[in-house]
Amino acid sequence: MSIITDDILSSEEKIKKIALSERKNKDCEFSKITVRPFKSKKGTVWQLEKFKDNKVFHENLSRDDFLMWLCETGEKNFRQISLTAEGVNIHYTVFPDKIKRKETANTVKKVEPKSHNKEKSYILKQGENIPALVDLGVFSKEFKVVNSKYDKYKQINRFIEIIDDSFNKMNKDEITILDFGCGKSYLTFIVYYYFTHIKKVKATVLGYDLKEDVVESCNKIAESYGYDGLKFYVNDVTKGELFEGEVDMVITLHACDIATDFALYHAISHKVKHIFSVPCCQHEICSSIKKGGDYDILLSHGLIKERFSALLTDSIRAEILRLCGYETDIIEFVDFAHSPKNLMLRCKLKKPLTPDLSSIEELMERYSFKQKLYELVVNN
Image 1 (spheres, rainbow, N blue to C red):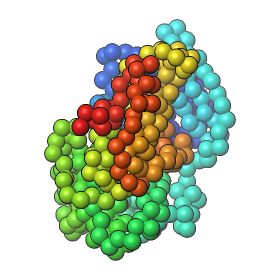
Image 2: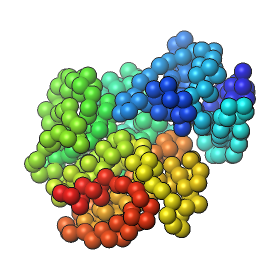
Image 3: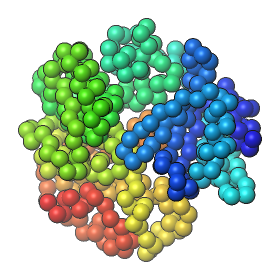
């Protein structure tokens, strides 16, 4: 056992999440792994959410099997391991001969859906018969939030709240929405439910994803609900043909890396009025950026470089959108405790403009990095 497993054993009941990142073993096929404990009929289960390219795999382990996996596999393959528990964050850096430990306090409370789910706070209330949330595993058959899905429930509600705030100013009785990188489509189903059942609006919602089996499953579920305006398509947003009709809104929730840029460009090029985009991993700038100026100090350490590159990516996206005529702001989507990918680009088209990208070009030239949205806007 290691110092990490000792900490897990001593604070097991308070642990919310464990994240493993910065892969150090080339033989490891997963770029990152997130672990969450949840209650099942057989006791506490530790669910591993493993990310590979643009796919996510899940595995459930008992406590003992998880601890053994962490020692034999997790610590071997990943350099950074973070533990989030009630009242404390512990970050570990794994070296060949030692593990460096840093502890900080937090205000995270133990997740208990009954106590946290204040009815007036959410548009999608616990206890309501929302079939999509049941079939997708967010609600139990009794319409209660499943403990392990509380973060997802929080994210979906927050996204709907933000859309609701904007839609109330739209004065529309019909709407068309594209969802890029929809995955298992938690959000896509709920957006359709929100517009058709809560707002009583005729909605066409199209979801795009790469995974055939997931798209097939989502179409079957939509058909079983009688959701005639909800369709899913297997499509590579970087290559495939997309809907060319008039679109009112583009949404993305954790579309991987440059898939977000293609979604944003589709919105820009089709003069889509509203964009709500929560980016996921941002590897492009991090993999190409080099020292070249005042910010070199932020590029000297891998972890800081990665975070700086992610912030720079979203800052450039926001600036390009502004220069293209969008009123753009970056807001905190959910608390960091619920998701580390917690920034949203919220944009509303005021007047399409031909952008002057010289300030971005100067930055790119100085630091020798690439950025896909810039390339798409300039080359098309």
